[in-house]
Image (cartoon, rainbow, N blue to C red):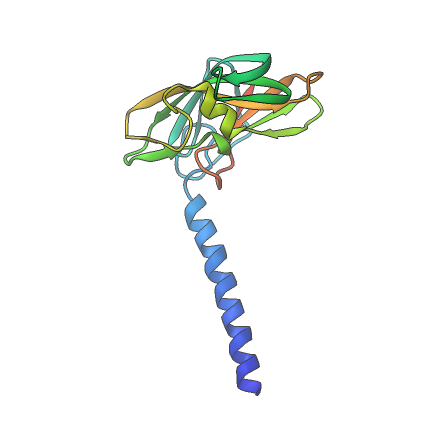
Length: 176
């Protein structure tokens, strides 16, 4: 009986260690804000139309348009709970392997620090060719697409946090 309990406890510990090791491995080297893909980061942030790096991606937030209440076509569309904010984003792969860009990894904030996750469905409707939905970007290539956030009608975005992956620390873009 004791060996069964010992085996179960050992198994749980091994699973926990493997899970943490996997998370560390998946996030390694992809948390840079300043251009180095080595895992070093700083508190540097950039403004709209300036390049910011996180991991193997270089991001440039080109334009932010808020106040939209619907996105999509006449037949396939989505209505905002509050208002949609469209962020036109250029994403360049600065690494040496193909990398997947996913709009759902991106975050936006208002002045109070409220954090908003990108609306994947609205982002899909906003891009005719699905530019921001699980898009493979080969080394040296880039895409430009719209990432959509659904925020309260009385709020304004002040900052973006752009991520190479779900496990990276992100690059900060100040919005004016």
